[in-house]
Image 1: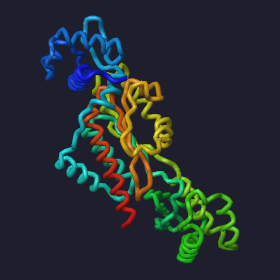
Image 2 (image 1 turned 90 degrees about the horizontal axis):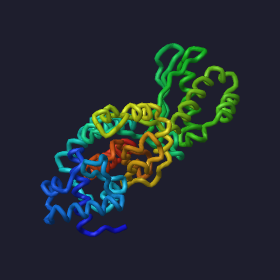
Image 3 (image 1 turned 30 degrees about the horizontal axis):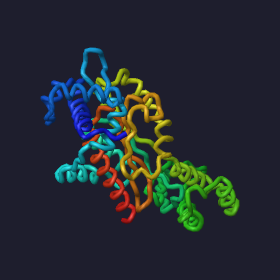
Image 4 (image 1 turned 90 degrees about the vertical axis):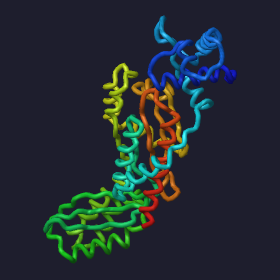
Length: 342
């Protein structure tokens, strides 16, 4: 449905006033805080029609109007002014992200912290996931006579580590044999190719040295499986306690704490390079139906790899938050890509 130009101006003014104040607005107040050049009676009539069409609502009989879910959607899709992040803010964001190490999880954690601070929302992100990622490097760091830390780097930038305990002393011969096996059988292979059957076959081929090397091969298999799993990171969730819009903010906090539903949700969202916005009941989860979720995918070396998203009440400042998320997403993807190329 396409609204008239005057109705659009009035709806935009209602949405922007409510986003700024959190207070329902009447016709007199709307005229005082907007550039509308019409009479109060005209505004009342237009507001009555917008209410009948479902774009605004009256929370209480004696109160003013607030945007409905439909009103927010129309505003975001048709009326919202574009906002350009100031160059100084961009430089500050980039410097904060660059202060993290090159590991994807730490980059995402730093990005989430920055985004939570500048948006006052909860921030969710998923670690890079590429079903075709290959094993790029494996390092073995002895930390005891029978213990070593194994570190594996994949082509998607995921760095995983795990402690391995052996049944015998970790000699230089065992380490050299392990690296030879890794070089011939694992480097350049996709993580999904590393199966139990593959490990068993390799162990048998090592003959008498199988007992010594098997724990290392099993640990490598575990790391490959960990690489294929998407991890959800959550930051700034306490920001949601600052909003009076939620009847029960703790219900959302408990929902976010479970993490599994959101991991599945964001992992299934492809081709969301441009920010996508789900408002209120457009969200599939009951716990988020008083919220808006804005998310966008980041690309690593040209491949869609993971997601950054914001969760806040439907009254969030869409015009400002969407560019912030978009810029953070681009920065995260660029930094991860540069790290992989080094």
